[in-house]
Length: 131
Ligand code: FE
Image 1 (cartoon, rainbow, N blue to C red):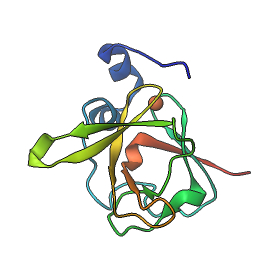
Image 2: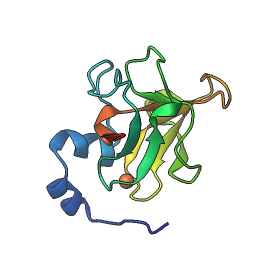
Image 3: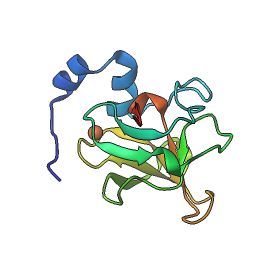
């Protein structure tokens, strides 16, 4: 996969302030505020910064957390994971493997078959409805 690298100035120009805050500054949108956490349409979820395919609707589930939740990425190498010890918590951060944009975190309390819960900001995603 070809990686995308841009300067922070370039990202700031391309992204909305909210997208920039979450994707580039590792922010978190308030729970239940996002446009996609209740989306049940069939389709694919792409990185809002670079357009890479990240998740499919068939791996989305209702976690009750207030953020879009998936039990698996679209492809194993679509996302990258990193140890995150910010805010006094030990969490695993999830980023877009192509552009490095912050997506959210992954937790080990998801449903079968993976047991994982990818907890992703709506703002980091663009939904493409299946035609
Ligand atoms: Fe990306």
